[in-house]
Image (cartoon, rainbow, N blue to C red):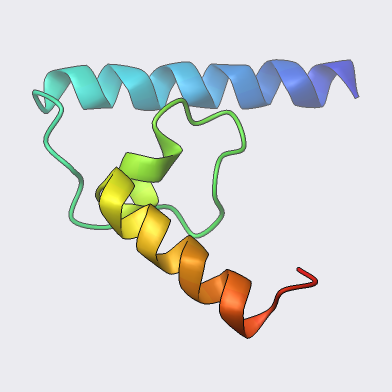
Length: 66
């Protein structure tokens, strides 16, 4: 499990390097599997806090038990 955690941390740090090189411009696509260590996950997958909040409120109505 420790090796797996080290690999995950390495991938996360490499993606952060790509973010820096791209001047924090959002990528045109995203990885097939979300990185649970992604520090900016709301921005990466939902574009903005407002969009995340809107989708979260819809989910609470559609699936209140969640």
